[in-house]
Length: 453
Image (cartoon, rainbow, N blue to C red):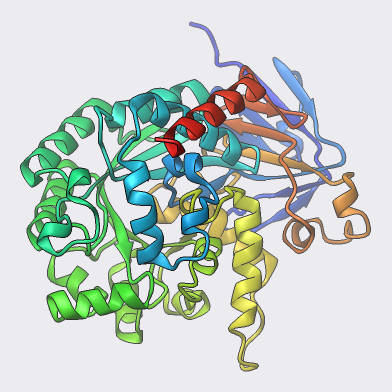
């Protein structure tokens, strides 16, 4: 019987473990066997199949992205949508997205995953909620296999079009029976609940303004019957709240609770306008939130009260959101923005959000939101998802007295080394086994054809 290949990550300047004790260990090596961490500190050293010298680096758990729309990388900074808030932004982009093809999904997913990986992300969810022209979730899964990112695919859906009072055009909605059938099929085909799983599927109707009460309720039943998680958008901006009150006579949190959409197996994107009663119900039920600060700023949606949510006990992770509402997908940069934005809400009565608190959302917080106990920290028995940043880069000069804080107070850096499930995916800042310039060329050509109709 062959032993698993061993990897020694040797003596980084600092190891930020994010373990249960939140230890920060100068010069502590990490030993990996196969896809898991087996030792840290002095006991980790010794011969290994591969040794990576991390002197001059900080080593930390791979970052976890809890909300994205990867296809939107094809429509960044579209002029008609640049200065619109949420509903106007969607109305400008829906007609373009109706022309998406399976090839566009595959290439945009690969590009988005490469971009995430280069920012220190090792696990990402994605919320694909439109399926025109023969697109399926298989297109994304195959792209994830090519890139090597740990992936949670949220099978989104829209079923209430404009003719029924919804926001999306009718051409982009599906029948609810077809949605539920295909979601069940994707779970059977791809969902792996095992520890260290690389592929999971979530049940994810798009939003209260694009699906019916019945689909929300039936989706919750399907997820609980199959042991999968539930995901949607909630309370994103003022127009979202107004729609919920006018259409359902409920706040978004009340609407979610009515339909079985609270619990530790549920996470909602944004929740910018979640009221105090909603925060209390989320905390009491362990319902998670994907906080997407850059997107919320870009669309003028507001500032989610993350400090209050965390203080109440709500699980919170970070999300870059779609690349057409953020226009970038740099997860370390998102953590920086989260920290800075919460400081804007500061009223003088509490300490400012720290770099460590924001990094905790990007690691342990995201793992909890995605229902995982095997990622988000560096400790024996955890998945070998680790990233390093080179502290000798010019952007960190003068900040080495606190490398952890430097990660967020200084300009967002590109990752130096990225390891996912024990495999080295980025080395010296370069993607391994992926021709990034060629991928960008393919992506740019598809973007141009999509926008030109």
